[in-house]
Amino acid sequence: MKYVMKLRADEILKACKGELVKGSITEREFTFSTDTRSIKPGDIYIPLKGEKFDGENFIAKALEAGASGCLTTRDNIDAPLVIKVKNTLDSYMSISEYYKDKQKWLITIGITGSSGKTTTKEMLYSVISEKFNTHKTFSNHNNEIGFCETINTMPENTEVVIIEMGMRGLGQIELIAKHAKPDIGIITNAGSAHIGILGSLDNIAKAKCELTGFIKPDGAFIALNQDRIKKFCQFEGEKIYYTLDEVKILEQKPSYTKFLYKENEYELNVEGLYNVENSLAAIETGLKLNMTASEIQKGLKKYHPIEKRWEIQKINGYKFINDSYNANPDSMKASVSTFMELYPDSVVILGDMGELGEQETALHKEVGKYLATKPHKTSFITVGSLAEKTGEELKRDGFAVKSFESNCEAARYILENVNVGTTIFLKASRAMKFEEIINIIKGENTL
Image 1 (cartoon, one colour):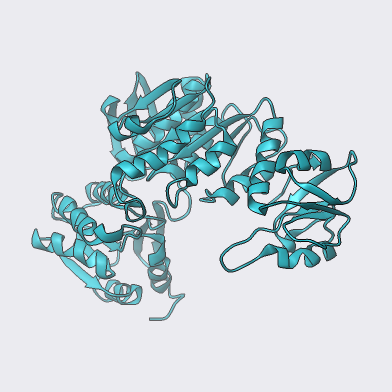
Image 2: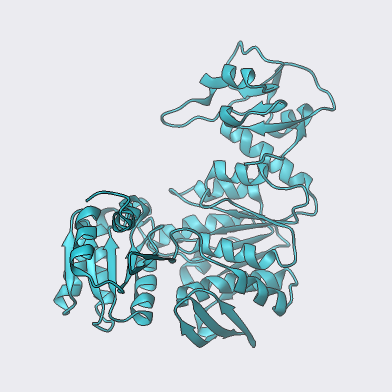
């Protein structure tokens, strides 16, 4: 990553309320780094801490690599510039907030949601880049450190920054949002992802709506039209709610969708109603930024999924569609049912979904019951003890289902029993490592 955030020592002290232990206040500007492996001369080293590491143990290494100084919670650090703080991550977030606020022209967009937030962020970027110099959260780096990275890597000519906000529990989105202070806040949906952590759909909506408490008063809130989002929304300004009820699908086929929304036609080089729904947030944001329909249309058409999101590969005669980047009951139902509609006489490989808590068995069965209402042309393979529960519901309704405990067993079954030329869809939580199946089919991993 190229770090471009620059501040003087007096600005750093002001931003993080730190104490200048060594060094002096000058007009010199410093850049920032949290990684001793990429330290450049002139960087201020910010040592972050985690459960299994403590960046403060590497201050000496950072200085040897050329760092001009550091933030620290410790005493007796010998460096040209030493700023003592209470917490290095809190300080990093405050410094990033200070730098962001210095860019008076900058428009900040904050986005969260139970599912679709990364896809929607990428669609937003594709659309908004048609008119503005736009910067975004990298990949799914959507935690507190990711917020800082996004600001720290923001080019100086950035006009719009898109900050994705993930959640591990109540208070997580609030922590990021209070530093981001978005002009536009977006919630893609409040569904059942993370229900194992938060316990109820209301708690999930409450956690997502923490974003709405920090939208600037003259800004806007854009969200899926869900009652539980409206219930916990804290924003009193302009609210824009979108829904698929306002959409007319004109054409849908593999890797292509054309639809009508509010009197304008739009095209996507992906399939699925859930992707159309995600695109509505991008359309409404573009309109809020006074973009023309033509600019928005061009941006949406340029969007392509990121790795492991409906990623199409042809391998040894099979066509794989890999959507195993992540999974929750809502996204599982949406993506698999879309695939079943577009690719009859195909194979779906389902894996376990994570973070569902005490309801995990019931939610896996619920997915199976939902998919069992679809046409019975698709065959299923399940991997994992929880996905097997999904398969049991499908089998009960007449679907052909094979269940395995490992990716290796599933790959072996494909090679020995599935006809070359078949289209195969992969959907599971990231922890299932479904890329192992693809690598075995490629011959890169041994059976």
